[in-house]
Length: 143
Image (cartoon, rainbow, N blue to C red; front, side, top):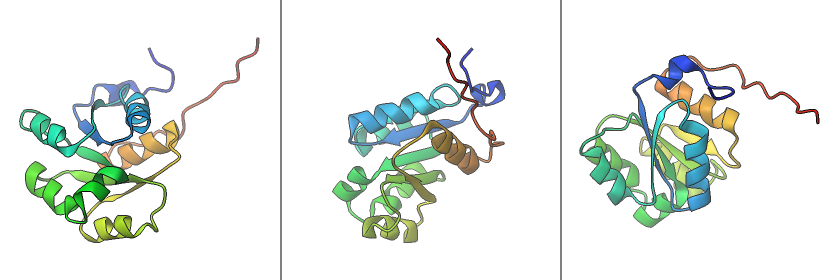
């Protein structure tokens, strides 16, 4: 059993796609989420679209670098290709002009970096309509 994992959430059948160019951020998000939710990671949208033919995501976390490469029509494209889902940008600041354009185009929110496990899980739970864990207890280790 993992520490800080809600077993009711771990058996939930929802799916998250993480589309992020930066391998470190992509891996960090996968590690933060994989204990409580089925998580698939991709470095580009083409791979995510291919996977979505068999397994539709409920939530897509989109790195700002991918959004920049695709342009401001990325939100519309994702929604037309993947259907109804929650779409969240992973970005340093909500003040970024591209973030604002994506939010106006229908993105559901922003997950601000730097990432923490608590903040990331809370945001995902909120967007998926799951009961939010009030906090992950972190106990000090005494050697």
